[in-house]
Length: 125
Image (cartoon, rainbow, N blue to C red; front, side, top):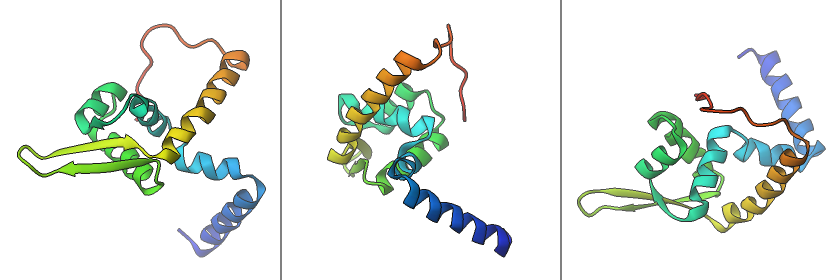
């Protein structure tokens, strides 16, 4: 990345962060895969493969989404090292609080959005 591009990127980030806290929130959780993980964890703690099945994500995609959510303290990761090794994920209180906001966003979409497509929705990896 050129110095000019990097400088411009920093200017945009500074403007966005001061312009609206919603942009910061979207940066933390605003990909379809991260949102799928959050919704899947609404029912409680799950193992990686359970989340993979629940979200229909590829392993790399799910791993990347989980890493970001853990880094942003939305999801917590717990590992049991007894054989077989098991890794569990659950929402933090911060993540649980996010469910209410996402519920309101879902209501807004239901009121103002387009009709969802019929049938299977294609994967967006």
